[in-house]
Image 1 (cartoon, rainbow, N blue to C red):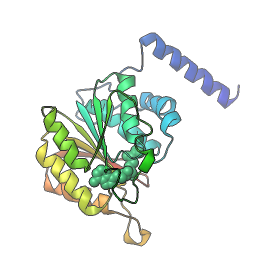
Image 2: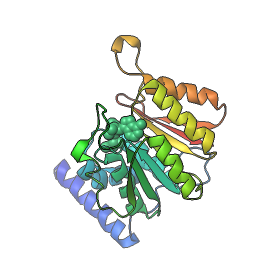
Image 3: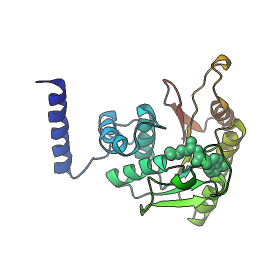
Image 4: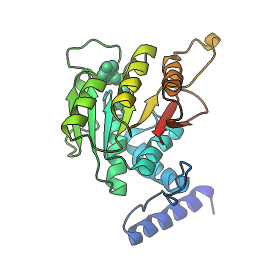
Length: 240
Ligand SMILES: C[S@@+](CC[C@H](N)C(=O)[O-])C[C@H]1O[C@@H](n2cnc3c(N)ncnc32)[C@H](O)[C@@H]1O
Protein backbone atom coordinates (compact mmCIF):
# COMPACT_ATOMS: atom_id res chain seq x y z
CA UNK A 1 0.00 0.00 0.00
CA UNK A 2 1.27 3.48 -0.81
CA UNK A 3 2.09 5.99 1.91
CA UNK A 4 -0.73 8.22 0.69
CA UNK A 5 -3.18 5.30 0.87
CA UNK A 6 -2.06 4.41 4.40
CA UNK A 7 -2.40 8.04 5.49
CA UNK A 8 -5.91 8.34 4.13
CA UNK A 9 -6.96 5.11 5.91
CA UNK A 10 -5.50 6.42 9.19
CA UNK A 11 -7.20 9.78 8.86
CA UNK A 12 -10.48 8.02 7.96
CA UNK A 13 -10.20 5.94 11.15
CA UNK A 14 -9.46 9.03 13.20
CA UNK A 15 -12.42 10.83 11.67
CA UNK A 16 -14.69 7.87 12.47
CA UNK A 17 -13.38 7.79 16.06
CA UNK A 18 -14.05 11.51 16.37
CA UNK A 19 -17.60 11.05 15.10
CA UNK A 20 -18.14 8.17 17.56
CA UNK A 21 -16.91 10.24 20.50
CA UNK A 22 -18.88 13.32 19.43
CA UNK A 23 -15.99 15.56 18.38
CA UNK A 24 -12.37 16.33 18.97
CA UNK A 25 -12.17 15.79 22.71
CA UNK A 26 -10.02 17.97 24.93
CA UNK A 27 -6.35 17.89 23.84
CA UNK A 28 -5.36 18.79 27.41
CA UNK A 29 -4.90 15.35 28.97
CA UNK A 30 -3.23 16.56 32.11
CA UNK A 31 -4.97 19.75 33.23
CA UNK A 32 -3.27 19.77 36.64
CA UNK A 33 0.26 19.49 35.23
CA UNK A 34 2.50 22.40 36.14
CA UNK A 35 3.94 22.27 32.63
CA UNK A 36 2.14 23.76 29.67
CA UNK A 37 1.18 20.46 28.09
CA UNK A 38 -1.18 19.52 25.24
CA UNK A 39 -1.75 16.44 23.08
CA UNK A 40 0.09 17.46 19.92
CA UNK A 41 -1.29 14.54 17.86
CA UNK A 42 -4.84 15.79 18.33
CA UNK A 43 -3.79 19.37 17.70
CA UNK A 44 -1.79 18.39 14.59
CA UNK A 45 -4.88 16.63 13.16
CA UNK A 46 -7.01 19.62 14.06
CA UNK A 47 -4.62 22.11 12.47
CA UNK A 48 -4.28 20.05 9.28
CA UNK A 49 -8.00 19.18 8.99
CA UNK A 50 -9.62 22.42 10.11
CA UNK A 51 -7.22 25.34 10.11
CA UNK A 52 -4.89 24.94 7.13
CA UNK A 53 -7.73 24.40 4.59
CA UNK A 54 -9.29 27.73 5.66
CA UNK A 55 -6.32 29.89 6.58
CA UNK A 56 -3.27 28.27 4.95
CA UNK A 57 0.17 28.61 6.52
CA UNK A 58 0.61 32.35 6.02
CA UNK A 59 1.08 34.44 8.04
CA UNK A 60 1.30 31.58 10.58
CA UNK A 61 3.42 28.51 9.75
CA UNK A 62 2.53 25.15 11.30
CA UNK A 63 4.53 25.60 14.50
CA UNK A 64 2.76 28.91 15.13
CA UNK A 65 -0.64 27.39 14.37
CA UNK A 66 0.16 24.73 16.95
CA UNK A 67 1.14 27.36 19.51
CA UNK A 68 -2.03 29.40 18.89
CA UNK A 69 -4.35 26.40 19.12
CA UNK A 70 -2.43 25.00 22.11
CA UNK A 71 -2.81 28.34 23.90
CA UNK A 72 -6.57 28.32 23.32
CA UNK A 73 -6.90 24.70 24.48
CA UNK A 74 -4.58 24.84 27.49
CA UNK A 75 -5.66 28.24 28.80
CA UNK A 76 -9.37 27.99 27.93
CA UNK A 77 -9.68 31.78 27.98
CA UNK A 78 -12.97 33.46 28.87
CA UNK A 79 -12.50 35.78 25.90
CA UNK A 80 -9.91 36.45 23.17
CA UNK A 81 -8.78 39.93 22.10
CA UNK A 82 -6.97 40.05 18.78
CA UNK A 83 -5.25 42.85 16.85
CA UNK A 84 -4.80 43.71 14.09
CA UNK A 85 -7.64 41.91 12.40
CA UNK A 86 -6.31 42.37 8.82
CA UNK A 87 -8.16 39.70 6.77
CA UNK A 88 -9.07 37.87 9.99
CA UNK A 89 -6.76 34.82 9.89
CA UNK A 90 -5.92 34.86 13.60
CA UNK A 91 -9.52 35.62 14.60
CA UNK A 92 -10.67 32.73 12.39
CA UNK A 93 -8.15 30.35 14.02
CA UNK A 94 -9.53 31.15 17.46
CA UNK A 95 -13.07 30.83 16.13
CA UNK A 96 -12.29 27.35 14.74
CA UNK A 97 -10.81 26.31 18.13
CA UNK A 98 -13.89 27.51 19.93
CA UNK A 99 -16.19 25.69 17.52
CA UNK A 100 -14.29 22.38 17.51
CA UNK A 101 -13.55 22.14 21.23
CA UNK A 102 -16.78 23.87 22.38
CA UNK A 103 -15.10 26.35 24.72
CA UNK A 104 -17.75 29.05 24.46
CA UNK A 105 -15.44 32.07 24.27
CA UNK A 106 -15.99 35.10 22.06
CA UNK A 107 -13.38 36.87 19.96
CA UNK A 108 -13.04 40.64 19.79
CA UNK A 109 -10.83 41.62 16.89
CA UNK A 110 -9.63 45.16 16.31
CA UNK A 111 -8.00 46.95 13.40
CA UNK A 112 -7.22 50.58 12.71
CA UNK A 113 -10.05 52.78 11.38
CA UNK A 114 -10.88 52.44 7.65
CA UNK A 115 -9.18 55.76 6.82
CA UNK A 116 -5.96 55.11 8.81
CA UNK A 117 -2.71 54.91 6.94
CA UNK A 118 -0.57 51.89 7.85
CA UNK A 119 1.68 49.84 5.62
CA UNK A 120 -0.33 46.67 6.39
CA UNK A 121 -3.80 48.24 6.46
CA UNK A 122 -6.27 45.69 4.97
CA UNK A 123 -8.58 48.17 3.18
CA UNK A 124 -11.62 46.37 1.66
CA UNK A 125 -10.23 42.99 2.72
CA UNK A 126 -10.75 43.80 6.39
CA UNK A 127 -12.08 40.78 8.31
CA UNK A 128 -12.82 38.78 5.14
CA UNK A 129 -12.30 35.40 6.89
CA UNK A 130 -14.58 36.14 9.83
CA UNK A 131 -17.41 38.21 8.39
CA UNK A 132 -20.79 37.02 9.66
CA UNK A 133 -19.42 34.67 12.36
CA UNK A 134 -21.59 35.09 15.44
CA UNK A 135 -18.82 34.83 18.04
CA UNK A 136 -16.39 37.19 16.28
CA UNK A 137 -16.91 40.89 16.97
CA UNK A 138 -15.06 43.36 14.75
CA UNK A 139 -13.99 46.74 16.12
CA UNK A 140 -12.06 49.67 14.66
CA UNK A 141 -9.55 51.74 16.64
CA UNK A 142 -6.33 51.33 18.56
CA UNK A 143 -5.96 47.62 19.46
CA UNK A 144 -4.92 47.72 23.09
CA UNK A 145 -7.17 50.64 23.97
CA UNK A 146 -10.31 49.11 22.42
CA UNK A 147 -9.50 45.66 23.86
CA UNK A 148 -9.14 46.94 27.42
CA UNK A 149 -12.30 49.06 27.08
CA UNK A 150 -14.26 46.00 25.93
CA UNK A 151 -12.70 43.88 28.70
CA UNK A 152 -13.95 46.42 31.29
CA UNK A 153 -17.37 46.65 29.61
CA UNK A 154 -17.68 42.86 29.78
CA UNK A 155 -17.16 42.98 33.57
CA UNK A 156 -13.42 42.18 33.59
CA UNK A 157 -13.69 38.46 32.70
CA UNK A 158 -11.03 36.16 34.16
CA UNK A 159 -8.17 34.67 32.13
CA UNK A 160 -8.47 36.64 28.89
CA UNK A 161 -6.07 35.84 26.05
CA UNK A 162 -4.60 38.72 24.02
CA UNK A 163 -3.20 38.16 20.53
CA UNK A 164 -0.83 41.01 19.69
CA UNK A 165 -0.13 41.32 15.96
CA UNK A 166 -0.45 45.01 15.13
CA UNK A 167 2.41 47.34 14.49
CA UNK A 168 5.45 45.13 15.29
CA UNK A 169 7.53 48.12 16.38
CA UNK A 170 9.60 47.80 19.55
CA UNK A 171 7.82 50.67 21.33
CA UNK A 172 4.27 49.67 20.37
CA UNK A 173 4.71 46.01 21.34
CA UNK A 174 6.40 46.98 24.62
CA UNK A 175 3.66 49.49 25.45
CA UNK A 176 0.80 47.20 24.43
CA UNK A 177 2.10 44.24 26.48
CA UNK A 178 2.94 46.53 29.39
CA UNK A 179 -0.58 47.96 29.37
CA UNK A 180 -2.20 44.53 29.19
CA UNK A 181 -0.18 43.08 32.06
CA UNK A 182 -0.44 46.09 34.35
CA UNK A 183 -4.21 46.25 33.85
CA UNK A 184 -5.28 42.57 33.76
CA UNK A 185 -3.81 40.44 36.58
CA UNK A 186 -4.45 37.02 34.98
CA UNK A 187 -3.94 37.90 31.32
CA UNK A 188 -1.93 35.77 28.91
CA UNK A 189 -0.67 37.05 25.58
CA UNK A 190 0.61 35.72 22.28
CA UNK A 191 2.86 38.10 20.36
CA UNK A 192 3.64 37.56 16.70
CA UNK A 193 6.84 38.26 14.71
CA UNK A 194 8.96 37.67 17.76
CA UNK A 195 11.88 35.65 16.33
CA UNK A 196 15.24 37.04 17.38
CA UNK A 197 18.12 37.35 14.94
CA UNK A 198 21.49 39.04 15.23
CA UNK A 199 21.93 42.52 13.72
CA UNK A 200 23.60 41.28 10.51
CA UNK A 201 20.36 39.49 9.52
CA UNK A 202 18.77 42.93 9.18
CA UNK A 203 15.44 41.66 10.55
CA UNK A 204 12.99 43.59 12.71
CA UNK A 205 13.73 42.33 16.21
CA UNK A 206 11.55 44.99 17.87
CA UNK A 207 8.95 42.52 19.16
CA UNK A 208 11.64 40.12 20.51
CA UNK A 209 13.37 42.93 22.42
CA UNK A 210 10.05 44.32 23.66
CA UNK A 211 8.98 40.91 24.99
CA UNK A 212 12.30 40.48 26.85
CA UNK A 213 11.84 43.88 28.44
CA UNK A 214 8.26 43.15 29.52
CA UNK A 215 9.29 39.78 30.99
CA UNK A 216 12.06 41.54 32.98
CA UNK A 217 9.52 44.13 34.16
CA UNK A 218 7.24 41.49 35.74
CA UNK A 219 9.72 39.13 37.44
CA UNK A 220 8.42 35.61 38.10
CA UNK A 221 5.05 36.29 36.50
CA UNK A 222 5.27 34.36 33.25
CA UNK A 223 5.87 31.01 31.75
CA UNK A 224 7.39 31.92 28.37
CA UNK A 225 6.86 29.56 25.41
CA UNK A 226 8.42 30.32 22.04
CA UNK A 227 7.51 28.75 18.71
CA UNK A 228 11.27 28.59 18.02
CA UNK A 229 12.77 27.33 14.75
CA UNK A 230 12.58 30.47 12.63
CA UNK A 231 10.69 33.36 11.12
CA UNK A 232 8.31 34.96 11.78
CA UNK A 233 8.13 33.54 15.31
CA UNK A 234 5.56 33.70 18.06
CA UNK A 235 5.86 33.95 21.84
CA UNK A 236 3.29 33.01 24.46
CA UNK A 237 3.43 34.70 27.85
CA UNK A 238 1.29 32.83 30.37
CA UNK A 239 0.59 34.42 33.73
CA UNK A 240 1.33 31.66 36.24
C1 LIG B 1 0.29 41.57 10.22
S1 LIG B 1 -1.29 42.28 10.08
C2 LIG B 1 -2.21 41.26 11.16
C3 LIG B 1 -2.58 39.92 10.58
C4 LIG B 1 -3.82 39.33 11.23
N1 LIG B 1 -3.61 39.09 12.66
C5 LIG B 1 -4.30 38.07 10.55
O1 LIG B 1 -4.13 36.99 11.15
O2 LIG B 1 -4.84 38.13 9.44
C6 LIG B 1 -1.15 43.77 10.99
C7 LIG B 1 -2.49 44.51 11.12
O3 LIG B 1 -2.41 45.34 12.28
C8 LIG B 1 -3.11 46.52 12.03
N2 LIG B 1 -2.63 47.49 13.06
C9 LIG B 1 -1.45 48.15 13.11
N3 LIG B 1 -1.38 48.89 14.23
C10 LIG B 1 -2.54 48.66 14.91
C11 LIG B 1 -3.07 49.14 16.14
N4 LIG B 1 -2.40 50.00 16.92
N5 LIG B 1 -4.29 48.72 16.53
C12 LIG B 1 -4.99 47.85 15.76
N6 LIG B 1 -4.54 47.36 14.59
C13 LIG B 1 -3.33 47.76 14.17
C14 LIG B 1 -2.79 46.84 10.57
O4 LIG B 1 -3.76 47.69 10.00
C15 LIG B 1 -2.83 45.42 9.95
O5 LIG B 1 -4.12 45.10 9.50
